[in-house]
Length: 325
Image 1: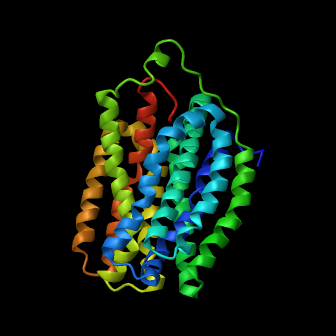
Image 2: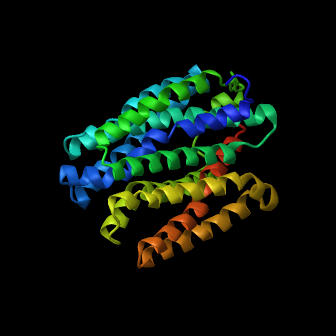
């Protein structure tokens, strides 16, 4: 691992992180059926993850700044691997909500560390890696989703498959994380310290609203794609997971090309073009008469939202010239 460049180590860290969670996504319909949850109860339970993330983020930022991104990634991966295995063991909707809230809390911690590490390596090397790093994240969650779909097709129970994959991936993730470079951000001084708790600027508010829309779209794809294919279009257990897998694959493709698009058309032009694609893909998905057509819609939406979050992370890091925390 130590022979890899800092950029490639960061990309591998992004790849390993979401694999276990990706294997949970195709099993949501199975868990819904096993617990006897209706749409409203399932929606309540799935709110646990974003709530956990929102509750943790205000504390995750200062903590990552104090212990460093590399340490945050190492500790966060251990906590995340445990938390990612909990939802498939929940006995009812309340415990599913709690399990997902714990998973969301750990995700906010480790993903913040990953983004800070990528931003600092970009600054230290002068090479753009944010979009590509998020592309590797999409490959990781796609791999997890495909493995989860395969396990479902083979009849392996979710409460065995997800923890098994989490345990298998964790050692590789930790070996890679330990090899990450110690890159320190410049500590805030003077005026930057005084403004640490000031109201956000209009530019930062706009970035937050942009990220909110992207997050809502990605969350809907993660939580409801398998259920949509099953309930609306009659997809079977070995097929319903393909919706998110294809979505993630095209998110990865868009992110791998994101740095080129950004250099060619600028951040705003790239965001506008991809946003238009997301709307077109959503319309196609809404009108889809069959699973194959729906899969095309998932692919177009994937390209459409692909560069949104990486662009926002870099833009937010540039507001006040701070790292991506």
